[in-house]
Image (cartoon, rainbow over the protein chains, first blue to last red):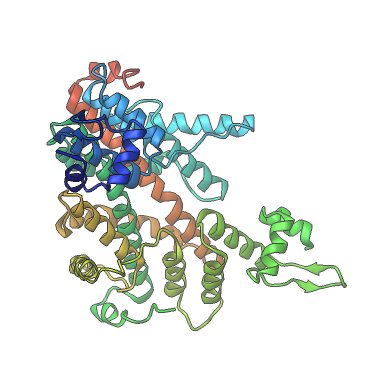
Length: 228
Length: 228
């Protein structure tokens, strides 16, 4: 297919395709004349993946290039290819670098959290960026004077693992690595707002019951009361 | 107490306090001389809340002002005061406004999601911003060709509601409205990364078992393999 059809089938605009070609995120097509090239289904898959990483995953062009380098390298297993894609997804947080005492407290908490999850039998890399995210949340809650501990995390971890098992079944269905990575990015990023939105609605429900009672009448009356 | 002690006890710098006073986010102290004012414990609580909304909650000054106006208005119940604070927290997504067909599909999906959650007995306002967040996720996954439905949401909703019940018990402990709002902001915002980080680690665990098997040996071997 030519550029126009590639654009139509991938849903990526011609200027964007040209940008991705220039940046080396998509391999060049087979030249058919001085100004025309022929593209394949593999280009369609690659374009969809690149677009998903840049727009849904909010990765940088350099991060997309890193993920693609691993995706194309036969030295990596499928697990590693999917893992690298997940590790590149924001948010990334940094351990405190300036204050030695602060850094020691951070490292200690990170190790506690890691060991707590490993004690549940979870298998993950020591360098997993998600461990830093957990550390930051617990450290910040504590600094603000709130209760936060690795024991609290255990409850959340047990509630979340079954979700991950169900979700992962879907990603396993994609044989092509580009499609599996794209699905990893899409499900990771797009289901995260689902969790936080449902939690906020559940809080509203719990608060409503606490303040107005559990009855059906309260539920009916609740309609317009919340308006600012 | 004077400004210096207010700064020390609230953990907010003197220039920041002066900015919040100028913006009307913190009430003026009682004047003791032409250039000095006396501040109370209420100022300490208010400063902590303002700082939490601006820095952890990433709210705008205008949004903080709105939350505080409700917090101080006796016409609102405690449930409403806490709810307004939660509604102001990002992320906020907008329904598509330009394309009429797209908008109709959005409104239809939003109503389906709302009714699905109400069928579980959940009580929340029709205008809850979290409903838009859910709608955007489901619509985007569908547009990308992935499976996403209100039935999927039901499973997540049932897993998340018990977490919200446990969490809300803590917020109920704060009698002062400023402290309760601060706790709402802190727990809402700071526990959200916990959920997404644990889900990412759980994915890594599930993927590791799928690709390398369930055995203890695999768990031990897994150490350095994931390095890029």
